[in-house]
Image (cartoon, rainbow, N blue to C red; front, side, top):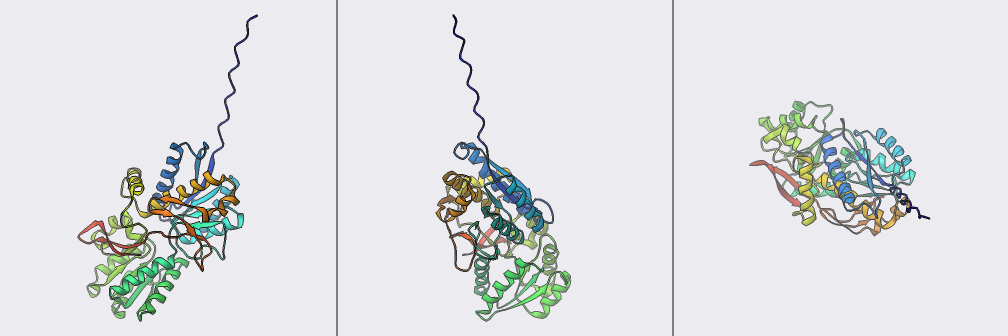
Length: 370
């Protein structure tokens, strides 16, 4: 009797993917240029994890949702992503939106690693569920205030739109500047026309104007008006929130957008990992990557490391923030909880005050390191 050939083994089912929910502003009124850079970093890191075999053999999947800078829309996305079974959340650029995400993630017990928003009070109180890559606003804007003081600016004006983020930044600047005898005049950028801001600046005698507004409007017409007003020759224009980092600023303002100091979260020199990632991001974006793209890459790198060590259990992931020890594109990443903040924070993120060189607006000058 002939023995029948053995039946082929049943193929093993593919392992279920590990999912990370990615929240990014991809449509207006969100800052879409920042969102595009953030998503490029998130996706590059996820693709590299996949190319290396995933997380312990399981695919890593980003589930992307557009927040459009809308806190209500972002909160709904968190609920949806939680229902889809994501292990953690990543992303977001706009601070007010990130606060809504962090608040909902805390309520649901869903780990959230904030990629690029700096508002100090991401949650109303301490939480075990939320950590952050960039430095808190109070730290960066104090460094910026010290830069202004050291440059001799003792009368500073801010043209600000009403928002929690701009109000918090103005408060940090005022407190830091006042500690050394300097003053801050607040101009309502929504109520005043650009010409009206120029008139107020000429009457005030400020030596520096900080643009704390949305981009491109009203920031672009405001900068153009100030640059074109002979009464304000020599006035420093600053944008601490980082608008001049992006190519869109230079494209719209040209030479008028140079010499505008802003905060950037990059080291003086990238190491081997950062250099390699910069080249890969440049290929994806078709332009120089901003610090926001690096923040996205580092976010997924941290979460993938946590998933390898602790699996997809949400509570275990959140409990492991203080155990993170990851080499990021901009330096070693560890988390601690600074006094007065409610979230886990990268303990040594790099920080610079930078501007576009007036002699070559495509080149950046480092004016101060934080």
